[in-house]
Image 1 (tube, rainbow, N blue to C red):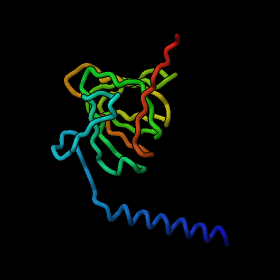
Image 2 (image 1 turned 90 degrees about the vertical axis):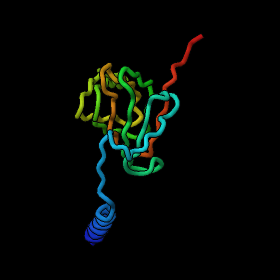
Image 3 (image 1 turned 180 degrees about the vertical axis):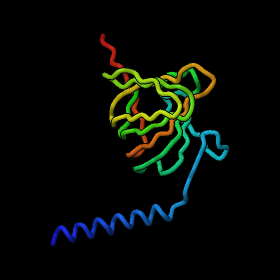
Image 4 (image 1 turned 180 degrees about the horizontal axis):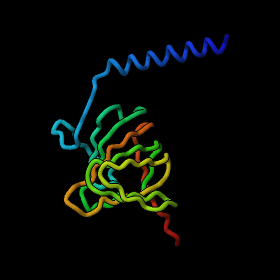
Length: 151
């Protein structure tokens, strides 16, 4: 009996969620769209770094963004509370997660970044900026990793 009640609740919740999604507008964007509003990244990532919110609220779960830096640009050591699901849309980018080999991403490649896993990145020299599509599971944040100096 309890299983039937739980199953009914699951089906009801699932249908309710589908209805919410079904009633929302369909969206599509290119990183070239003039309608996209590019804003600043956290200050430690530098002024040339830009973010565009594609879908969702930065203070809530399930946010999609474009992240853009110019070619020949180093992204400092940092981490996020959320896992990141990324697809490189433009440029070539090397990503290095702590205690892992570096990965060179080329246009169209997918990458997954675990939550709270510090990393750096470098947008390779070339004609195109690096643009990443990133899906965050948790509200967006970025924390700089500051190296301790020993005296």
